Amino acid sequence: MKSLAVFSKGTSVKSNPSQDSSTTFSVMVAKEVADHIRSWRFIVLLALIALTFLGALFVSMNNIRNAVSNVQDTDNMFLYLKLLTSTDGTMPPFHVFLNFLGPLLGIALGFDAINSEQNNGTLIRLMAQPVYRDNLILAKFVSALILVGSLFITLALLMIGGGLCITGVWVEPAEVLRIFTFVLVNVIYVGFWLSLSILFSIIFKQTATSALASIAVWLFFTIFYQILVNLFIGAFIPNQGMLTQTDVVRYNEIVLNILRLAPSQLFSDATTTLLMPSVRSLGPLTMEQMAGAIPTPLPFKESLMVVWPQLSGLIASTFLCFACSYYLFMRREIRS
Image (cartoon, rainbow, N blue to C red; front, side, top):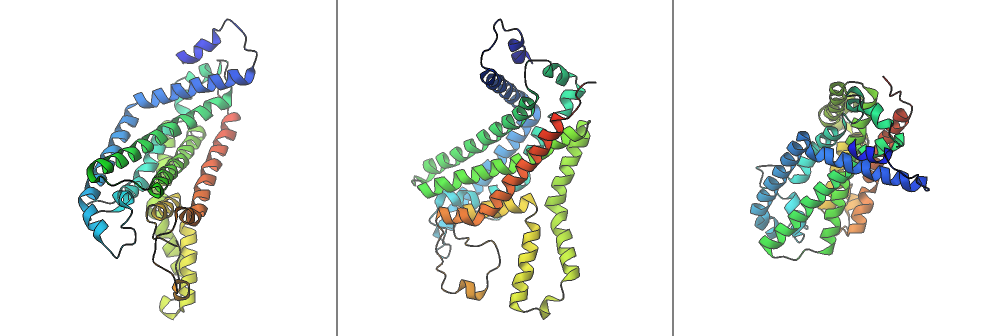
């Protein structure tokens, strides 16, 4: 609020409204970033993700010799990808943890983005400043994404730097591309839950209600969605012992396509393919399709083409939730 008040006390009139709007927007983004950094919930989540990353990295470092020496594993040449995927069974890999912690990070950054401002009476005072209304919701979204992107980029650089110091093995360009594409997928995945929580903060007036609604959606897709899909499909599919191989493949494709309506499944498919170059397909393969296939890692471009539908689904879902938030907020009555 103090930063925005400076613009209301200006002594000269800006001759370029677009430049004035961009300057105000950058000030609002900086204010939101500072508010998030000083908040205890972000500090707690940051500590939780950092500890999870260090724990998973420690386990993978202890298991890296066995993972690289396994000649049957076609991914054993990608040392730095193994740091993100290998484990000795004591704890899951880091990308599996992010499937669970990423939604919590997005929800925590956005569940009270709008309704807390209105309940505290700061929203109407903020709109009294010379700012556009759409700049406010854009600043809420962009500032959180900046924090999330900075967090994951820092963790990726720490992982690469730690691997260089401990192993002394030079990182390959293909590994760098896969790691930073993995970071981008994480930001998009957290951005979906962020936009969904912002949407609920606009729909519901109480912050507790918007938080519970966001967590309910997350729990539904994480725990109950797969159970309901299996029960629903099992009620309409006959006994699998009576099906041919073609029918079984078609049945599995139907189940996978329905499961991919869940953001967590899209994230899991995308990260698994990017971090494991030996993954050549995300669906069931018949013996005819596997005939003649050479068990070698896929190039980065081909792995990206395999997961492009999943990335498109995550991006489309994020933009859809944010577009709904934008529409509802622009039509919202903010006066008491």
